[in-house]
Amino acid sequence: MPSQTPCPRRSAAPARAWLVACWLVLGAPALAQSSAVLPPEAAAVLQRERIPAEALSVVIEEVGPPPTPQPRLRWQAERAVNPASLTKLLTTYAALDLLGPAWAWQTPVWINGEVQDGVLTGSLILQGRGDPKLVLERLWLLLRRVQQAGVREIRGDIVLDNEAFAPPRMQPADFDNEPLRPYNVRADALLLNQKTVNYRFVPDPPRGVVRITAEPALAGTRVQAEAPLATTGACGDWRAALKPRFDEPAQVRFEGRYPAACGERQWPVADPAPETYAARLVAQLWAEAGGRLTGSVRHGPAPSATPPSFVFESPPLAEVVRDINKFSNNTMAQQLFLTLGLERGGQGTPEAARLVLQRWMAERLRVDATPMGELLIDNGSGLSRETRLTADVLARLLQAAWRSPVMPDLVASLPASATDGTLRRSQVAAGRAHLKTGSLRDVAGVAGYVLGDSGRRYLLVAIVNHPNAAAARPAFDALVQWTLRDASAATP
Image (cartoon, rainbow, N blue to C red; front, side, top):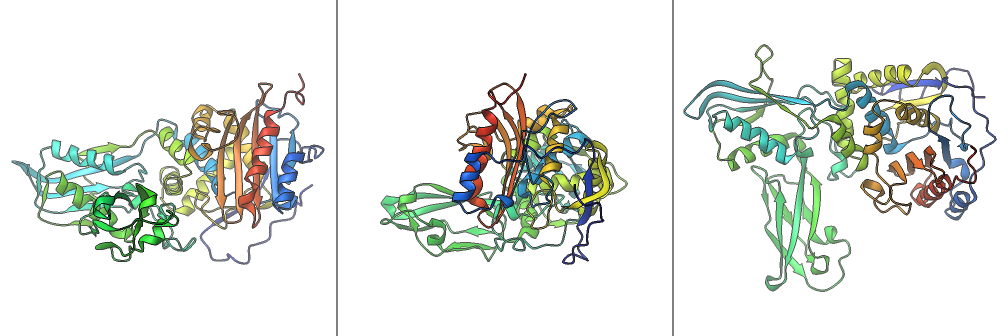
């Protein structure tokens, strides 16, 4: 039995903003541990990769209405571990349950002034409310709608209001010293195109160069149009061979050579000046659409007493959740996390979002305050060294989701084996497993649903915390295959 003594404080985090919750799930009687024997195939992989069995946590049990059947496998299910991106299951299921699959973000827009003969004497104001899908195409549609309202010239400013969120004060390099990786883009209430530029490289062998284009173009930023082509040698580490210089936002340069053996390639890069990205993108798109602007694009508050001229709506939440889970999009997950704080807690802060999730887990998952272990909710995406959950909590979440009205939306958001998302290269039969994947340095995991040969459906949670965690993927595949082959183990 787990200890009933209070959880000790984490001495390393006395002043941190994270909400620490010590919870015990009480919804069902304690489950027997007689099924805690790892399948030989999975145990063999762990032994081969020198991953101790103690580094693994597993729950495999049939899904369905209560009472929950005896689990097929439980292994260290109550140990608090880093779940990496499996955290997104908590964020997305809570959002679907609390907001509804058809819920959508709204971006208010003010045409603030008099419009005459295509001229706005005043300002255009955009207020971000957290929409994670304000990508290039949709921002173009928003500005197009402004022009359809009769505005071609703005004799004033374009004002951007992103004050609805108060994300943690962090730099893009703080997590892993990789500030140009798109997964490190921080949340922003007015998140435009996820603050990313996609560079395309097209070799031109007759001229001995590679042509370089950037999408989107950003006002005030010049991108080197060509670089020398290396006509010999393998592709290799072509990014390093290019010797990129992203340190000056006004001028992107490539001081090396591009290997011709690479063919055409793309390179998505988080913009090195994220604080000015939105202003540069809006200025560029407005000019490309033929609009004129006498002022500047700047940050500022939206009117508090005047209703907006129109509201630009996002795709429904169910569609956004699919993007988050199938492709494990950290930035979008953090947007959704802060949105829960804003919409259900009154503030777009991590603290408010954590309180919303705490209350939701208590109500929906029957989580009691009696301490079992130390569970931490950090930023809702799993891009964290501090997040702690247990395989047991994730299993109970998957059981609750299966019984809920939003089950079809959550399951449809999970990568399907050998089909799409992060499972497109899976060795499991196509569509037989719908599993969220997670990985960080020293962490790997899967969690979701598996259809057995008997026709029974199972939930599966498997997490490894170990320096060799990346090598545990074949062990997860073995657990999935063992779960699939349930016909002989199933009882009528």
